Length: 421
Image (cartoon, rainbow, N blue to C red; front, side, top):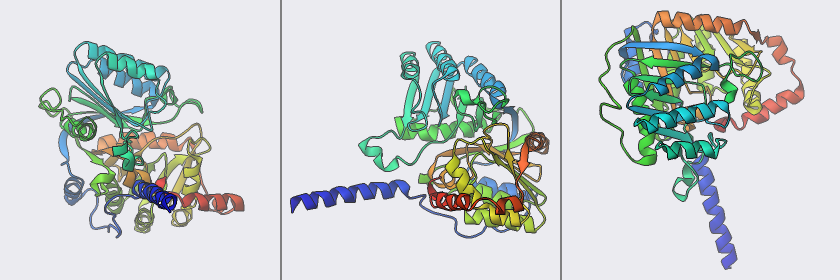
């Protein structure tokens, strides 16, 4: 009798833990976000500011950095110039040459008296060398792991921080799709070097980026980072309106999903999407199709033969039928793994950051996006989009219909895991 009771208790506990980890946010948007105004209507910015949380601030300067040859030197230079504080949060920090450079730079600044705080996702950074951690901690760097396996975090194993944030002296910030690993080095010139974009931010919106880091720092170390060394007075330095907002499962608001739905619903002329992982839900698919029916040109660039997540790609394929039938263009990037995460709407509204276009980013992960309202900045991103488009192959409807029956079956089976992809 007692063995049966014990086994029942164990099974119940295990199933409860599995359920708590697989469930998504507290709330879910279930009804379509309708087309009520365009991105050029003042109501659009008011809605984005109020619905997502932080207000949209003027006076920012944003620089787009493409691929490791531009991204890593800029980040490392900012770290080496730090005088007071450095906050770094990343999902990926792996062993290799670039990981060693970051470890050395962070350690040197800490020894020089700079307050350095590093947040590493426990799962994503599992491949970091122990010597990097030891070097940083010996130098005085405060290093925290996000949701490691402990009895008190066992219900949060499936909730990862996917944020990519670097803030130096509270004055300059970086975000985008890049992790700290050798895969991002180079200039996407070979299949071994990924194509990606990262963005450097200066101006009042940097404080919002710092606040996003502080959000998870409080959850781990339970200490608030504040004061002028973290949140200095920030003067206008540019012409861009910008907003940095965070999203996480615990908040339940699905902020990043709402941002995408409202952006698509407000498009009048064009939508350009660069996505590393694209598994849209039913509402997103409906939003894309509605936008296309009202005359919006929609172009999407996704990874092609080079991908690190073949299962996600197969799940994505199963959702392309209605999109292609509606006249939405899907292009596959050919040279290497495509890891960009950029949305451009009507050549004025741009959203960049860590978010993938899938349920894991929308409902399970902690994410951060930088939104920019600036026609000049958007025009430069359109140029980069067109360059990537020139290295991509358009998927035709006929070709897609004629893929093998086994491939179609694999796509359908992969989609059953949509909520976890």
